[in-house]
Image (cartoon, rainbow, N blue to C red; front, side, top):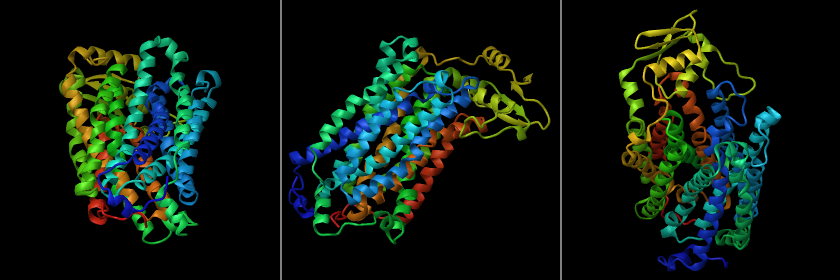
Length: 538
């Protein structure tokens, strides 16, 4: 593709040529497949708890599965540094061609892994290793794809064109839900447990080959070509990005004033809702997949709409409004979601008073669970009640054994069977009754949360591209994006689940995304500036 300048792009502001359409298609398609690979594990995390971690404590196994899920996110900023440097020195195309190969190979490897019953603790160690490779690859993918598309786009439609890159994460999540759902529909339950769960991972090899073929047809970004021809490239993009003012200032502000809040809103509106519906509200997994899948289909156009709108009214105000609305609405929306999906559970909460009494010194907040972890009776009891989807009050009884209270009736001592029988006798529903689900209300609530996702996520790629100069753009935008999404966002299911277990309220996990979104809106409005009219060739 011949080099072009921003002024040339402005000459035909309304015309999207065939080359630009191909750039959007090829970049987006490959990124969809990368997100598909990455989110397969996230979707199956509750299922993997029984495959790759020791039995005996369901919540501990689930926390271990979420910790492994989080590991892939925690390493993403390091992938941003490695591949961002490559992209700023060697070119955008080369960097995100390598990332897709690493991602595809790691995902295919997950499909070949033996489980805990076969090789013990080596199974989760290998699983974590492959998740780390996936995280490194995704850390390099996003910045390359977003930068590449933006540098091919006219100034007046960068928000619109880069929003297709934003939509790839949602599309990849939907594809993961679809493939897993089809496997679980057409395969017997025991067959899926034995080997059928491997199929979605093995399919990634086909997607990898197809993606590489498509991306090999791409030429280098015209902005990068022009920069290299004029000798304006950076030889030390890491130093220039994070150790020199004002770029280091903008990197920090981009993290705390944009991407941190965007990350938690994205993961709350899609992943945390899925886990909440399945684990807390006890809706059948296929019905949960259907609800989330329909909301993704309905909400995905919001990403493009708000990307398009940001070309007209600005990026920053839309992102800030999305963070504020999410923070204000999460508690009422999740409460309404409980009423819509499991009204029997909501009625149980309203009619029963549940207390768990224990010596507070024996109760711990467990986040990263592994062979080093030990669990007291208090921990087991809180995990057990939380796993039932029940909110409870905590009472400190120093020196006394754990006890359960249901409307004043008390069971002394921790005993899972007796506690389960007590909850059953008190009328706690074992599962959500599909006949009682208000499907329309539930779907509208999920779509509302996808509107917040569209507001924060649709314009963010264009905003980050425009915030940094061309010579260090790949590196500078990738790190704050992946810390915001990988650390603040990716840790959400793990931290929220731990907060719920420790505090005894099924909604208290929402305090984490709410506080982060509020922080972002305050920092962003106070210190960041609008960028939509920036010339990105410099």
